[in-house]
Amino acid sequence: MDLLTFLALFFVPLLPLLLLIWKTKTGKPLKLPPSPPGLPIIGNLHQMGALPYRTLAELAHEYGPVMLVRLGRVPVVFVSSPEMAKEVLKNQDANMCSRAAQPGTRKISYDYKDIAFTPYGEWWREIRKICTLELLSPKAVQSYLYVREEEVANMVDSIAKASSDPIDISEKIVNLTDTLICRTAFGKVYKGRGFDNGKFSEAVHDAMACLSNFSGEDFFPYFGRIIDKLTGHTATVDRAFHNLDNFFEMAIQDHLNPNREKTEHEDIIDVLLRLKKDQSRRIPITNNHIKGVLKDVFLASVDTSALSMGWVMTEFIRHPNVMKKVQAEIRNHVGKKGKVQESDLEELHYFRAALKESWRLHTPSPLLIPRETMCDCKLDGYDIPNKTRIHVNVFAIHKDPKIWKNPDDFIPERFIENPLDVRGQSYEYLPFSSGRRGCPGINMGVAIVELAVANLLYSFDWQLPKGMKIEDINMEEIFNLTLIKKTPLILMATPYDLS
Image 1 (tube, rainbow, N blue to C red):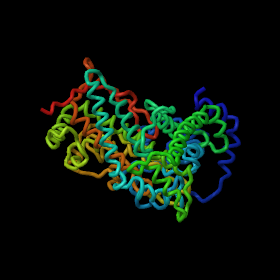
Image 2 (tube, rainbow, N blue to C red):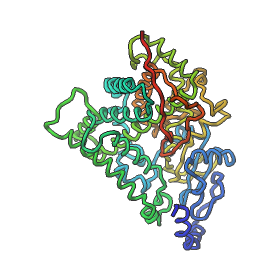
Image 3 (cartoon, rainbow, N blue to C red):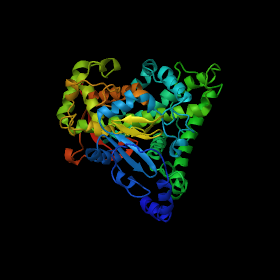
Image 4 (cartoon, rainbow, N blue to C red):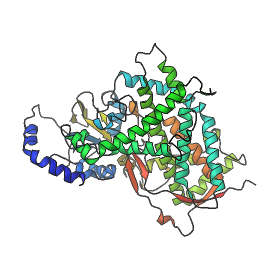
């Protein structure tokens, strides 16, 4: 039984009672944003589809850049213009930066002890400060440079050894980010013990899917728990949480082992355990807080970095003239050193413009995680009541023809002519969000993607497998909070001759 059929059978008998509840609500009239017509009980849920950011971008053409959509019993505001994004993410950031305490995210966020889904408050400010200063600052990211260089070199070596055969570049990239982030967070790669061969990446992917899938309890407060049990959502969340939690617990206990071999560099768990011992902290840090932060590091880094690299390699193979221009820039600058180092990246302007263009076309998070207002607000003249959820539709902004000429085309030159930053200071370009809820892992993620992709382009010439044409490349998307390429990218790699 599909979800909408179930909702209809379950709620139609209760329709008179629920309508009576709605009609008896009192309060002064509000000037609410325009809203597409919906159905009783489920509102506009049936219109969202598998790729809601696309549906909502189309609806915004008719209803405007501030639009009210009813998802079940929950009114949600979607904004889809740079001006309104700036209002939400900057001008009114202080009043619109909380998170809704949604039952669907409670478990995987360790009862709101993470960064991404925790409502605004003292704990969130404390952990955000820890991440900014201790875990993911430019200095901290630079301290893990040796890990990035070693693992990127390992990936290049593995591709060179298999270069006579078609290579699943998507798999190589996932393995890279899995290993790299494990070493950064845990100090080592766990082999054996149930997490071999990308199993941890699978656990991360499952958790992302749970966070993006429909949770009845989020939209139907009185009956949602029953919906989630009957549709299997509760069991899926429990399984994903169990897999992640087992791994995090194992890693923390390893670090607490007094006989553990000491390493020269602190990893992320080392830092968090050190801070946990600090008795002067206003808010004590528990193991669940540590796990919540680790969950964010992995969901933001493993998933997002791998997906970004997969999409940009896809765009390069679809646009061979652009790829050749980028490779010429990299190889002319690096020469015969044999690898691209992070110190080279600053001079690779066209390469960086191509990455920015890929992030525009394939935004890691096309719909930002919903914020929640903390007071009654105004947005473009409309009333936005307290505790209203607000989404920024970055996809709609990045594909707006009023902002971007030929918005569906891959044109890196647009970022040479207009060198927008990726850090959320220009509201027509928001690949990693902005404001208080901007991505805390941006330094780590960008460092991984730039170094890995630059070395792939420097070390190999890339082609499609024999008999395959550019038109055959599947560009279908899957939405699990992040933008996933539906099918793996299979390529042929020819090692670059340095002689």
